Image (cartoon, rainbow, N blue to C red; front, top):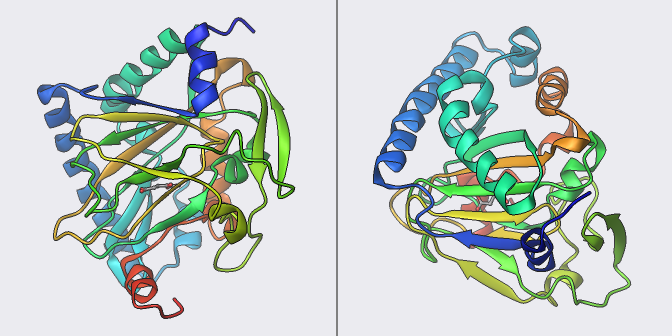
Length: 292
Ligand SMILES: O=C(O)CCC(=O)C(=O)O
């Protein structure tokens, strides 16, 4: 491996902000692509509802379709959609390609898209509990990933911007394993396994992490690796907080995009594919201190 000094510096922090990554025209294009994707996603939810089909059955029958997760108790409202680049080639040619080139410059090596999604975080919509993405991606091959969070709306304290842990590399804890990576030993903190909190970093560890909110303007990007602990609060504004998440892995670990989504289509109900997908319903109950 021939890692650049910039790549080593990135991995020592786990994240890097790229303000103004998309210009106004590119942000408008992303909004138009979002409009197309959202209409398609809403259509899929309607088809499932009209045919009284469970999502797992729908995706076994339509293995190449956009993957759509509805709001809990709002079966016609979109919470998240995934497999964007496969369903919208123009998205791959524009947004994915621009980020892929940026990663190539930063890391001095090629990257493949691993997965992609858009979280809508509707008004009142869900908090993402503290987690590390590597816990969810571990069984798919690549040992290290970089995600670009691309803001379509301004991401603020009010609407639940992402928060990242500043001290996770230095935190001494017996509640972690150290994984050997190209960027040294990186910590995987102990987390909940199964149940409603599947994937959440244990509370005792979360409490010792220093959390920093990252506010973004539309068109800004936050790059973060799959070891960075992150979370976000519920959306307490009156507008959605839409962010695209494009996750890549170094190309030398292979191209896993098709295989990842094939497994997801075949086994949609598997909890490994449903780590931390909050809903409006859940957030409101949590905010009220009630069990969700
Ligand atoms: O949308 C957010 O605020 C966080 C998203 C996230 O962490 C995830 O989807 O795993």
